Image (cartoon, rainbow, N blue to C red; front, side, top):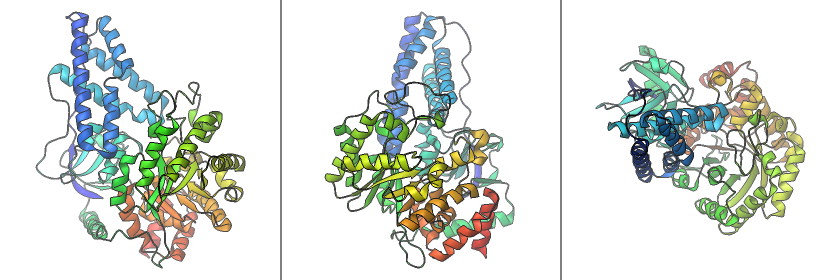
Length: 539
């Protein structure tokens, strides 16, 4: 949460005019080539300075500035008579539009392309690229979207929070804001209409923006901020409920570079290690040795602790050339997750072999799970293959309703289940998680989603099978308590949320968490579920 005045991001550079170039093509192409190289080098320099998750984001953006396909497109447009500025603008805009059409993860990268184009055009014009506003006092930054290169330069002592018109939960703005421990609300309708100096309250826990708050609203927000500040001084003790029952709090990680911060913020292990970063920029799957080196680095950071690794989750928003033959009509419902791996079993075999080798080389406790598992048949397939290749603890992710409905069978065929609330919500509500027009449906508080979680939790309790939650829902402190009441035995989240969730859990016993969950299940909507939960806490 944050309270403060609005300061808006400066406007983008003006669109280049549609005019024929007056210089010869080779000369114009040399100027553009130099501009590309300048921008790429600048982004790499920022990446080195940033480190961690931000470094990977900026390195990927730097590669965009030197992408051969884009460079060839720009040169072709110059040959056809375009100016360098206009060629860059049109080539990047066309590529960004194609990513937006694909949707999902790729659509979120369109903003990164736009930023690279702005930086190249700024070099060609000899002017500074649009950047962060200047202010002597703290403020809440409001923007249409925020480029990764700017996000990593935010001063947390000056920027109180972020509000953007565009972006989704996997946009680089959201990812980097979390890594900087900054409150952020993205995808806010009308954000561009907020005026400089307007006082607002940003509540990242609820995704709510309060404009021109009254005295009572300001007082309540200040009380909440004082309480949050006090909670930050709670020792980094293991997660637990008020009655002393242990409730492990784990971290979601995207690469080995994220390990240090997770350990510093008190993660008791890893509840979700996403392995996609090893594959996304590859024309062929990395070798067993290459994968094992990366997995070993992660496991070594958590000696004696649990590290849950998700096998390659590609398809839909993350298509890979060596896994997918071509575009699909509806990729979110197509060949993704375990389905894609079964169709390319050698890729899965190599990954499991590398993971088993990494466990032997470290003292961490490795758990491995398959993404997007449908039913008992797929569960048995993955667990049997994992056992064959040396994986001792094998589980599945619950991301689609069919698995929840078959949970009583599934929990007896695997070692654990991990609930991915992001996709479970998407598929339950039939609402693309990256599509702004249906964003209101993408709410894990909806009782339809929570009832599916309860089916899995009850099945796990009955069979003695651990049930974790690794979706973003676990980062919401009050919803985390509800998830525990529904049967979750561990919670995994972005490391920045660990302190808040740890403090919230300490307020409840297991019985109280179950009573809260029972109350919420009777709601008719996500909004009513939140209201019932808050009323329960207040009373």
